[in-house]
Length: 443
Image: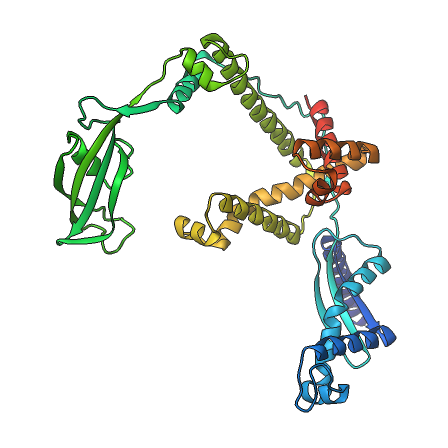
């Protein structure tokens, strides 16, 4: 019986060890490291904390910044200085723990203070290191690039857009409003005989057919003549943003001052002079220019799609356990880019969430899949770069920095500050070389 119990105990212990090994393997790139700052180093940090705090406080009976330490401690407590010192020492502790353990983090670490007393502070750093990447196959995947061409229909379509851009507006001879005309009007809206906010405009250029006003308004203006006044009812849509006006019947008073029409340009000498495109003097040369531009855009799109297809194909051959912290950090970066794009359009994130009826959580969730792919491809390319010993010399990186600085019309130092330094230029070049290698090996 005793032997049976011992056997069961051994099996349980064996299973526990096996499970522990599996967990350790799963989280082998998640390290919880402890480090202690003590003695003179901690004591000095506490003294510095007192000097910093004492400069900015006034204690009754003493000039600002002149209170003795004993008085300060009696009023605010020694713990205040220790906690301040602990916060100031975090960066030094972090650098020390990295050096002692010879680890390279891939995201910002999390830190907590495990212990704090009169002699020392103890930190726990959770550090995420680069996960192990295994690629089963990354060559011979037979990915084809799309062949592009430009049709005459596409050229004609773009030519029509170009003529539209240079369309001129002139007073209409008969001054009667028709579809596609521009009516210069005064208007004012009334609800129950009282003018409502936002319902008035003077010398407003309304393009008939643009549907910029509420439904039914433009149709009432069609047929009006210069100088004519008209009053007509309009019912606001039920989903109109204003609570006061949604679904309400109102009256508009409109006066037409002028009626204008669009005059489509002809492909004549004046038009080509206005275009001011080098070498473009007639329809044939203009079509050549249009074709070249369309082809360049299509080639760029095809190239980007080709690279995406290669990365996606190789990505399916990768085995890696990506820490969620890496994905979250990539989402943070993408959120910052998204916010910058919105700012360029004059839209704050608060307004964006209102317009889209969404939240920050919704946007982060929307970006998660793309962020995961970004991290996967970055790890994958770094692994291939190491396997194939793809390198970029310092000289190559310096030449690239000069070229990019010229491209963006910046001095080299300014460019490097914005780009992240010469190491980032070197890394970017290595990534591009690795992608070129994959293109060559997966045709």
